[in-house]
Image (cartoon, rainbow, N blue to C red; front, side, top):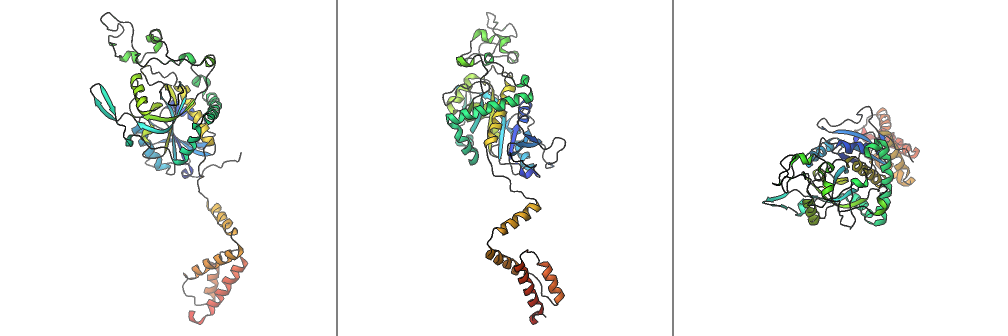
Length: 430
């Protein structure tokens, strides 16, 4: 592999990866092939920029990792505005992390915890009108955000075929092992097939030990159809959810005794500031918009830069939401990001040092035919002569020769000297 030189300027960075949670950025840090600022911030940043960055390389790309101060589209928008101050030539932003998933994809495939969603567009799902007992989502075109830039859209299109999807999933699985070794397998290990539980959408995460009057003995707040705060911070095992409702879906028989590879799902993703924890609302949203998951940052970037959301599924966006799958899901998303960047190509930054620029100009001259080179040299020479004041002596003529001594061509130098001699002795110049 050809050695990739260290970048000399922030202007050479074209790709940004944005993470909102520490568990997400830790996984992304593991996919960098090289870091450029281990001990200092050699690239600096704009004085008005309050972001925190880490600069490095993934594959053939110079990449800046952006640490968001928290979740949500407003923070994502502010972070992106600051990013553009210090890195004005960023062309593609990748929002990488974890999200809630819709259990059933549009392509007929099931979506499991740990799988990865890649957006081909975003839907702003939490904008609308709240009526008594109903929320009317605004689905006009302005609330369905544009697609990625044409280069990225074309790149992602090839992964819509089953063969390409399986190939990418194989690369993801290889990269996932590397991420797990880097962050520690204990921290990003697969939690287990038995921990991937999908309950019926109407099954609530609440205390089950009820008095005859319908009040919960534990807290007195889990009435029929309601969930108390104490229940929300309790696990399904603590509340006995598995005892009251079996998981309504299981893995295929061959996957029960092994660790499944994360699957890739390309499609629309819902984005907004609201944390969705309702199976019924999730299913209604998916049926209406066709989204495969729900996240909270991507919508804040669309107005500022081209964006692709890459999120690992950490829960099913229902009231049984848990953080148990976050580390594995973040590692899966990071491995998908690495697989993408290893194959994605961009135009290299056209930035030259003075020495390289001079060499490039000479190479361009060398590519011309001898006749065209002489013609171009004479044109350049006469253009410069036209800007020189009237000469009054041979000594001034000699100075003029020194000024215009810019070509290594012997024939051009001869013409310059002859013309300078004529100008020096012409009566009209005295």
